[in-house]
Image (cartoon, rainbow, N blue to C red):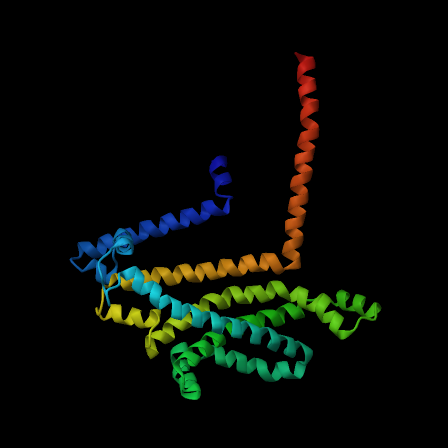
Length: 299
């Protein structure tokens, strides 16, 4: 049992366990659907059927296979989501900075931020389209709005998390306001900022797909609607579902990787780990000759 617990202490082991459990549950549900004489591919296909659709060479639309249809449509959706995400996190960071500079602006703006976040995406899309008059611009703005709120609120929480002792120390050194922000506030807010980006990145992708289903004109959402209406293979729908989930998870891991490169705290942890490993190796090297000498004497 101790060995089993030791194995599941590793992150990869728990992740693998969850993947296996999800696969088993999926296959049981697909088997139940098929046993009830319902068309499983329209409701819940087996995973091997979805995997077969990935490698299938049969054409489903305009001379393209299912994978080619998904990848071609994904390009437009991901580019719009990326543009909206970058716009949203930039605006969210600077708005949090402005609200930190002025408590009055925070009291005025924060309730409206919450109000915008409470509006459903399906209700927000026609409003933005009516204002901009352009489909592509409206999709970018909606992705920006959804990724904007978590970044703004988390970054503002990061600014407020700074201890009073750090302010007192900077005032003791007669530091300027700009120095306080660049040396204390912004570095302290970086982990909170990336927490917001990890939430906002998948939301931007989801928003882009949802708006595509409403407004058409290409994209994953548009192909998703067509596959549900049986305008093409239903397996295109399932490929889009899995592809969207993969991109969302990948975006979160990408934000984690960027945080590890940028955050001073993460860099300090990596440096401490490297130094610890070097010291551990040097200790082993110094101890091993002594052990071998003792063994020879004993022999």
